[in-house]
Amino acid sequence: MLSALNSLGIDYRLLIAQLVNFILLFVVLYIFLYKPVLKILNERSNKVNKSLDDAEKIEKRLVTVELEIDAKLATANQQTNLLLAEAQSQAKIIETNLAQEAQIKADQMIAKAKKEITAQQQKMIAEAQTEIATLVSAAIKLIAEDKTIKFDNNIIDSAISKIKQGAIDV
Image (cartoon, rainbow, N blue to C red; front, side, top):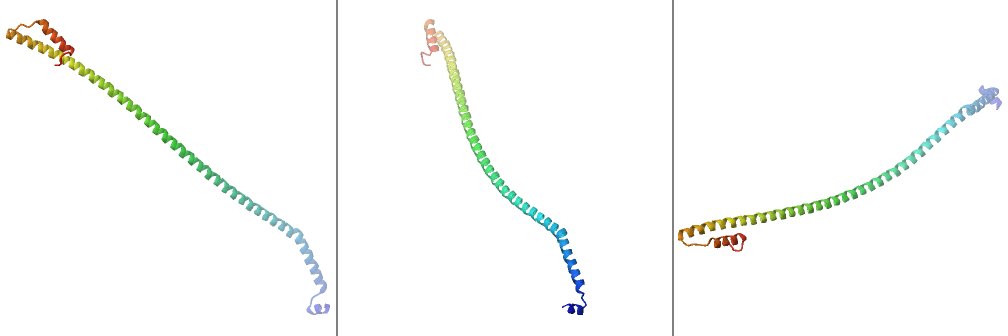
């Protein structure tokens, strides 16, 4: 084998020295370069994995928070609808009460107006009776004076007072 290497122009001592140099270089590079680079890559990989795990946890938490928000919004909408329905029923009750109060006031005003009208009618009837009695008395006196029939003033006054009192229908 040595002769074959020599025939090719290779010196075995030089080959062994280069092989030892290569192994030494490999060991030195492995210790000083490969291990630190491998350590940095592992740390980086761990950081990436941790970041992915954190992102997954955050995503799960986000979904949970969104569900909670949706539930709270649904509850708020229900409460809003309940409050709105209650406010509408209160408004209807108030409207009914106001309508009843207005009706009562209108009825009172109508009753008062009817009383006033009745009082005015009675006053006008009394005034009319007095005026009619006066006119009748004057007419009877004129007729009595013309006809030469003597009527007693007491009889005429008594008839006029009966007419004024409403004892006789006119």
